[in-house]
Length: 463
Ligand SMILES: *Cc1c(COP(=O)(O)O)cnc(C)c1O
Image (cartoon, rainbow, N blue to C red; front, side, top):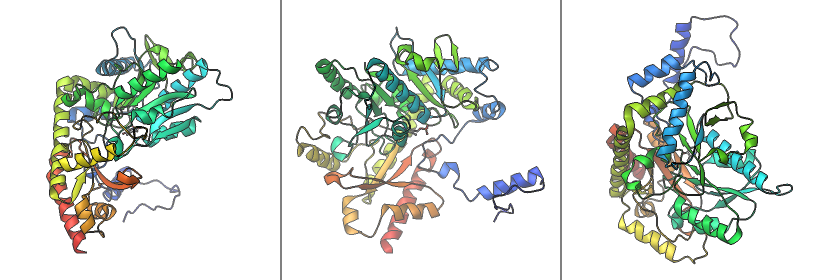
């Protein structure tokens, strides 16, 4: 029990700062510590040097661009680094912004696509739409709601290999389509949408109708994973795809920066309608920043710049290799336990599952919205482990549920969130899953996590 009175009123008198601070610290001990919050994507481990940079620069405000000119140069450098990492062309002049996270990046990218469509078309009296997968993050639906755009949802499921299927996109396009949102690294399962394949589908549509449709890639997690994963060498998902106008990523996820920083990069200044450029807060050289928020700490941007220089390409590659192999290890163990079946892509799929998914695809007609002409490479995806009960175990133990398991684990001091993937299963059934995001501070705990899960599920069987 805290000694601080929680009555929702400002106390009339003052109290000693150290006493109040220690009461607050004591109070917060009831919460799960960040390194045991296993479902979160947010980076929760920082080196001593990075922590020092955070503390000593926390009070620098991003709104004061002139006063902190050095930091604003760092920001421009980060955008340049990311645009090259995402393969912008030699002759292009990418522009971008630091945001509070991917959500804000998505709002801005969506807004730019909407305005561009309005300027090109005679938009009066017509309702714009965007194509999104049911695997899209909720913030994309926030965009469509806040900015009054119709969301045309392509169903994503086991049949489509847990990623957007080009035919599902093709069936929903029309003259009112402002753009397509694709996800590089689904929050739900870790799969990458086939950006290149969908680009080709948009090529066909453009040839037939003359209507160019841009893509925005929500690479919140994958933007920092795919460029450093050798398995992705042949995955063309970035500015190499002609339709890709903009890409966002969360610096505070696999960029290894503290909360709150995201990145948004447009292929070229021409992707931003001039009307929005006029609203920009500041212009410096070729970099243009326009954001929804104003005052916030510059510290996460400084740490992003620090990370780029201290880790370099080699450091990011090494870290991603550790995270991906950790995810692979945990996945194989869970698959091998007999209790679980992983649906995330960070592991070699068991032959049985692969066969099952192939069968599901073959049983569909070519005009099934989830039909895919090619299966994605199975070993590419985020370092996440998303799993459900194995079919055999579930049939033998109908009383054991994923939510009970999540609750038991929570009472042991670890958060492994569970959620439902409605209609994602074979035959349109839902799948209940648990998610472990393999972050740096999770890697040393992987065997504890495996033991905990198998121990708790055995306990559930006994009940
Ligand atoms: C986390 C995430 C977001 C939201 O990002 P924030 O940085 O939390 O604003 C959007 N899309 C995807 C795919 C994500 O994983």
